[in-house]
Image (cartoon, rainbow, N blue to C red; front, side):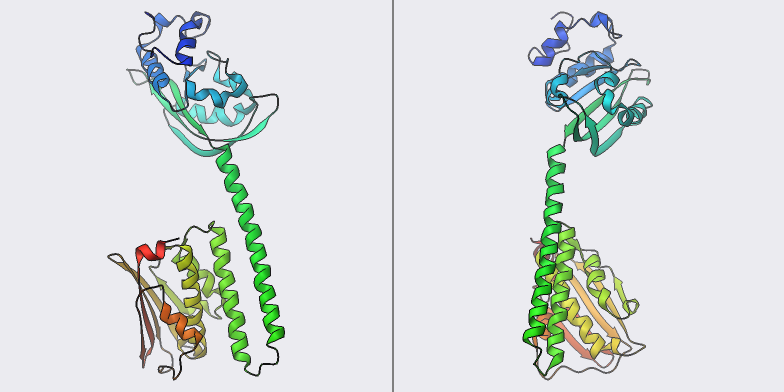
Length: 347
């Protein structure tokens, strides 16, 4: 114990370091270790986070208890070169290690490596930081490798993405089937405009679902929702978006998609987008805990409130769950929509 006052008294690796013949390595006898290496080793062994010290030009390696699972069957490699321990992945690791030894810390998330820590190679992923370990005079003595394996997390995300793609594919098929059924069922209906409106609303709903699937059904930005929903407009360049960089939860994404579809469709049929000079301006602002979106049509024909309120009007009136005010001005329709930020961000 007298040679190792810098080590904790307990722990698997603390004992292995005490028992190890360091004189047979480039580090030499422990009594000759620099104070900086002893301090780093003590910090490392005390830590419960997986880590290793790689010291000197020989890359001599010291690691702690938490690092053992990462090594697998390589747990008896104490005092060996880091290059020899990970020889199978050395071409990918060496450039990163060189940066740390030049004084530049390296942080990488979910780094893919094919490693061999059993009787066969395996694909693994790691999030790690290679940090320079400096001597008192500022020179680099070695590096600290703090690392966590993320293989299972990466696999889960990949499986979830695959499942999402499959769900999206099936949803598209379902929407297509509903559209086909509606066309056949309603083919004798004289009011074709209503049938076409139903078909387009289904398409708008499908577009929103596609966007959410790409985001793993978590959140999506208003800008991306608007870009996707308004892409079906015949002249998208006549719609100006300002702000609108707020993230929405899944329920609000679906609501906004249907809302925008109705506003844009009405603008093309009766409003500013029904004329050559007409335009639409969409402004989004955050006021306190409230999102304010204003849909403003201008340079179009005079508009008036509809004599009857159909399904599309009801969708607009629902807004995003907050206040909705529609103003049928002589210069064009203006719709002001307010919603609580906490509500629209909810899953």
